[in-house]
Amino acid sequence: MNADFAERRVKMVDGQIRTTDVTSAPLLEALLSLPREAFVPESQRDLAYIDEDIRIADGPRYLMEPSPLARLLQLADAGAGDHALVIGCGTGYSAAVLSRLVKSVVALESDPELAGRAGTTLGELGCGNVTVVQGALREGYAAKAPYDVIFIDGSVEDLPASLADQLGEGGRLVAVEGRGNAGVARLYLKTDGVVTGRRAFNAAIKPLPGFERVEAFVF
Image 1 (cartoon, rainbow, N blue to C red):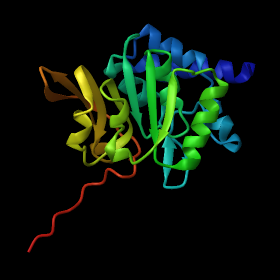
Image 2: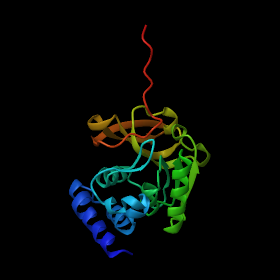
Image 3: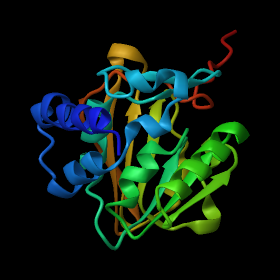
Image 4: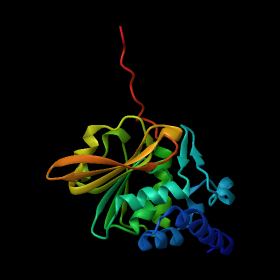
């Protein structure tokens, strides 16, 4: 393990994450144990622990800034027996973090190059409970449903109702709705077959392609 990166990891957790009310001990331990630098292009590894989003592919696609990612994952309240779905896993970092918290993870990615990179990196890090699948992000991955946790790794303007259908009873879906500073993190819960949502906090994160709102034509 690179000692310099290990030090940066501790500073990231202490300076960027604990200071934003992230208190879950299992989540903090997961963030400390995973080499975030492995999930960015080699040319950008020195930037892996900065408090900014890092571009990982054209499209454009980003590795989410550490603080909002940690807050969103804490909101999901993932547990050891849970089955999780990550939508838009990118290079696999959020799926890797969840893999330390839950029983199994399905990591859905639409970009074949990113899916390949995610599968390779997750395999090298021993994340054997993560399955990387390729497909349209808006459709989720019904083949492995129902899920206890669905995490959308990027902001959305339009949240398809069909994703909530892939939640199991008691399941949680975490998403940031809206662009830029208008983004709001929301938690959706499925209780007695009914999904309800609540606002959690403001979150300005990069959008996930494929979830743009389609403007209706007005005569």
